[in-house]
Length: 356
Image (cartoon, rainbow, N blue to C red; front, side):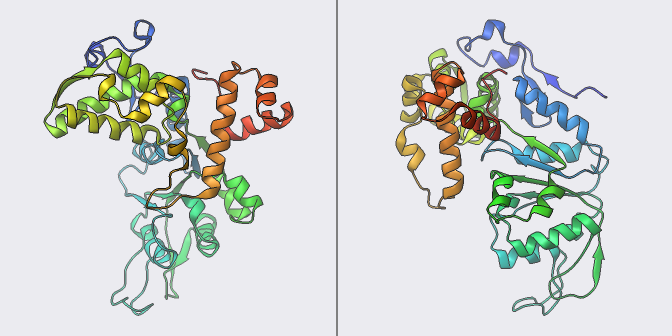
């Protein structure tokens, strides 16, 4: 197998910090893979898996929390595939109303519905020869799941309001923050579609599970924010970085990126210190836990209760394991569970000690 095409930074990247980051003396150089950054074992495994699966046409299901980079992984797979010269078309299945999503995916003919004044091709037709990335496929309705299944099995579909069969050659990559196997058991997701998607599963780690990547990610985002916003912030102090590495990062890499940009814009010059951090990061540094308000707060866009409960359970299990140095018997007692149940939940959430 061809080695992963990675770029390692030298001292220039680490010099962005005015003081050495945590464990900098033993830190290996940053690894950049396409638009992703990381040197943790979990991310290196992801980079290697991308290389292995890129040049085939097998369906891929990417699972991970919001903000972990599912879209970046999908795009990297396409860019390294034999389809790289053809379109890569991404669509968020949870962001478009069901009545519009069908038309977006499969197109429509003139007069198919009120407002359909012209014939319009859908994403699958536009992506012919390339890749379609269906983000948040767990939010797709049962009726649309049937049509996607037909594309996977037969490579064909009909536009909304049309009778002509349209044949396409596309690779389908999907992603979700949900546990689709649980959704199948609940009757919310088709079992036959699940197994067609679950050919090559990829589980992206949360940022709190790859904390050794935080200094490198922060350095990269700091450089980019300086460039885009015409600022001259020269780095992060050691105490600021320490607090950042203790934070739980519920929004993952996206949250880190946005935070660094905010601090760069507001600081403008000099070094970002602990005093420049928002209160929630200072709380995380003292207790290693996200404030209760951050867990329970509902944004203007709403919140998926099932997903929130799942993530809350995952966070509590991880906290109990960290408190007991991953001694499962002790962690089970803290959670009032038997050890077998805890082990099953650890496997389901794919939890591992940091650095493993």
